[in-house]
Length: 264
Image (cartoon, rainbow, N blue to C red; front, side):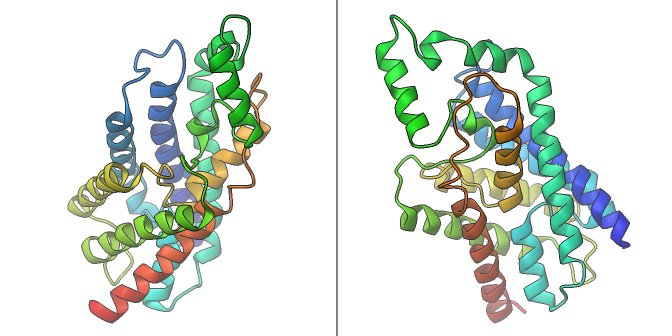
């Protein structure tokens, strides 16, 4: 496959991944959304279906890595780093495009949510306002969770370990189920299995950090959150942002190492 195919495929695929994955977070989170408060089960399955859809769309062009941790793991597994920059560039651009499309699709809901005094603070909402202020003091605005991940308990070592463990599971599933030696990508069955693995990771390991398990999935939308003209949006929590980038990359390397030792 050519460099242009890789870049276009990864851009389109990652944009679809974030549009549908971030979209379910917006649907569950934002005021005036019909799916508001649908819960973690909806989010986990929403992200799983997002992965499946993105894999099927982008697979013919790029092999559907859609995740720098997957790209790094495959480079370690095969010893070929030639196209790694192209993959990473397409993934980051696609993630930013997908996050922007979530904002467009939920524009009215973002405005309603971020101008609601019970959410951003105001008379008669002291407890909720205090919680919002506390979150913003930590650097996380009230809708940051639509765009990127964040910990329930801030412990850098634990948060990093959680992301590493979740990514190792993902990488082992991808390497053993889908991507063949010719690099042609996940097939129909491999895409479905990987999507279900993402659901499983979300349900089992997503509670502590929101399971980024994908550096582009977290960093691209976080950049978009910082740039978008959202009222009362609060901070983008850059103090935490390194964990969902570094953790999955370490997990990808460990997963590839385990694969080479045990399966290759």
